[in-house]
Length: 101
Image (cartoon, rainbow, N blue to C red; front, side, top):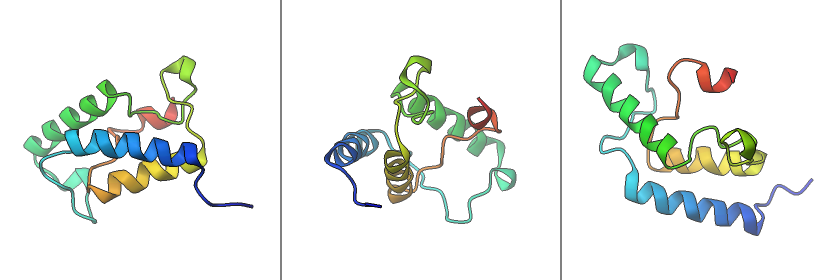
């Protein structure tokens, strides 16, 4: 199996990286980040970040396009997580809603 990123995957990375550079959160999260240990202000900052991701079309990226996703495959999903980690941005997760849908 070929685990190299395709030109399409790298184009996806470039698009996401460009968007993140313009929109990343002001406060990076720590590696041991936990929503349960944060104050109410952090909760509101996270919700604002998640809304920004959604407005940019960066939530549910592996969902089919007809359901509001980007139809991303496994390698693009890996790229997505790599790029969020690179800028130390939290994953778009408020409860289990996105994952359950």
